[in-house]
Length: 325
Image 1 (cartoon, one colour):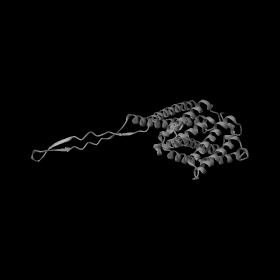
Image 2 (cartoon, rainbow, N blue to C red):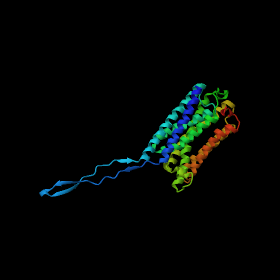
Image 3 (spheres, one colour):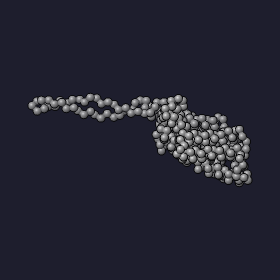
C-alpha cells in the first residue's frame, strides 16, 4: 500500500502538469471568438409577369450559422482537457491519501509530507466545486494547477518520509478533530490565495498597467468576480480555522496541562488568525479599498506558509513531531 501510494502521488503530479500545460495552451490562444459568416448576395429569380413582362424577385438568403475560428476551437478543447486532467489528478491524489492511510492504519496527517498532500487535495477539490458552479472562472485553473504542481512535487521530492506510527501525544480523538479542521481550512485558504493574487494582477491591468506581472492577467476573469470569490472562500474558511485553533487549545490543556503556551506553531497560528480576521474586517469596511483588503489576505496566506514550512523546519517546540519526521 505504501509503494502504491507513492506511485499514485507521482502519477498525480504528472497529471497536474498535463492540466497546467493544457490550461497554458488555452490561455495562450486567448478567448474564444465567434465569427459570423457573411451571407452571399441574394440571387434573382425571373418570374413571368402579366403580359409577358418580367419581374425581378430577390430570393431571401439562407441563414448562415455562426462559426468559431480554429484558434478558439483549439482553446476550448485545451480548456476541457485541462479540466478533465485536473479532475483525474484529484482522483489520483485522493487515492494516494487513502492508500497511505491504509498502509499506516491511521489518518494520513501524521507528518509534514502527509499534511501538505491533504491540504493540496482539499484545495483542488474545492476548486472543482467552484468550477462546477462557475465555469466562467476556468482560466484561473492555470494558476491553481501551477500551485498544485509546485506544492505536491515539493512534498514528494523534499518532504517525503516513510510511514511511521504516530507518537503517543497524537494518539487522541482530538487528533482527528483538530487536525482535520486545520487541514480543511488551510486547503480553502490555499485556494483563496489564487483568486486573491489574480485579482491584484487583473485589477492593475484594468487600471491600465501593462508591465509584468499585470499582463499575465489579460485573459483572467474580471477583477470583480475574482475579488468576490476571494472573499467568499475566506469567509467560509475563517470560522473553521477559528474552531480548529480553539480545538487545539482544548487538546493542549488535556495533553500538556495548559491551553496556550506560545509554542512557535501556536504563535504563528494566532498570527494567521489575526491577519485573516483583519482581512475580513477590512473587506467589510467601505472606506478600505478592495486591493488593500486583498493584500491582507495574501499576507495571511504567507503566514500560513511560514507556519507550515518555516516553523516545522527552523524551529523546535512541542509540535516538532509534526515536522519532517
